[in-house]
Length: 93
Image (tube, rainbow, N blue to C red; front, side, top):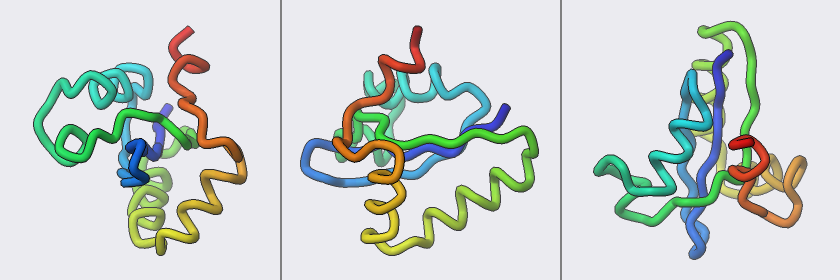
């Protein structure tokens, strides 16, 4: 499986990413495991994700979402997570 996801900070900064292991990757973001954007801006909440089996289509989807205006990203998040809850506990079972 391939995953496209959005991490958010408490101040509202958004990060869109791609992974083959969403649980591991979200954990790395949540715990500042690597230097980079999510560590710098404290993007620790997994607020959106989608999955698929085709590498190319999911990579295209990540790039598509990255190009979205903020308002469109917010609408995407609210479509599955209207309260902007951290979805990590749901997937880390």
